[in-house]
Image (cartoon, rainbow, N blue to C red; front, top):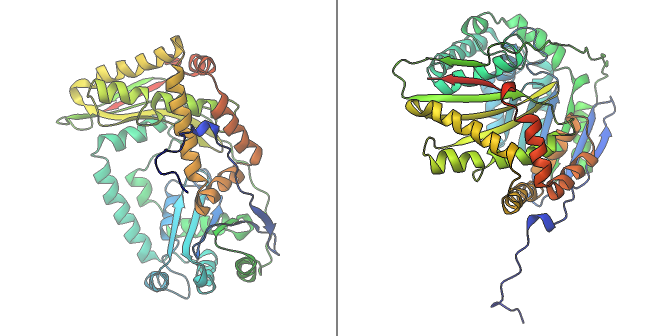
Length: 426
């Protein structure tokens, strides 16, 4: 008989085992790499086509974003309206996400509709025409959005911190400008599309309730063309951080709020300190119970939210603290941010506090391992960064075993105030 009076024992997330389910890896007949995962009980599927078509590869500012934004807006056989109508008919979602290093086309649909939808995706990826009328509308809308955003202190601060860290001409530091949007031509998009959305450079990721039938469907559509593999060109951009470490901008003389961004360059996820730093960053400002949140939101009441984030790219990375506070408390808030950094350098974290952070990180990971799409995203991050399952397993070991003393040493290494850039926009 089930005992309904005695509650089950509570276990810390540290005590669980974490196993990333294996992913199938194979090549289509023409050499396109396919990674697929059969998981889940619902008849749904996610397929992502990932191309080296991000900010890093664009020859002209704004081309990556514009190409991604107009990718679904017409082929030689279908108009933008016909493409969107076909997707809606099957209840499917097809989104394009441009990023710093990659652009990703992602399809969500019921598994049974793949046979009808994959030819449409293939058509988009091989026969997009970027109609001039669509580009004109895109430019107009992009400029209007930019003009609105430039009135917002947080938007300007985000632009300025990246430019300060990497340099305004670096792909990770460039920011959108009206004249750059106006200068984009249809020929720019067609050329970028031809070079960067070439199927010879794509990686395909599929997850959900899928198997050999769905793999065969992908093979019949995306594996039929003979592809010419072109050696990747390794482009190098010089880092040009701002020499002036503090920049205060009055964007709105009547503004009542100030956006604070404090950041520094940081190694990407290949560096041995990256994962230990994830733990320290979480304790410092990475979740709602962090030191920054407890001090600057809960105790001082300066803000609704303050966070510190680590960003890893293929060719670099950054750490940045971001918050918006009342104009009259900008300086006190900055002072408290640096105070919390110094505290982590001077004193080891409390063991109970560290256990809470570990449970938070590992608890989130348990959630990520619960569904097929989350598992697929874990694998996609590993594969696109040239990593294996061992990297995932190492992460778990560090989350479970890192000590407060090790975090203090890490803080002393990276919370060095002269290395930080400080941006304030009012």
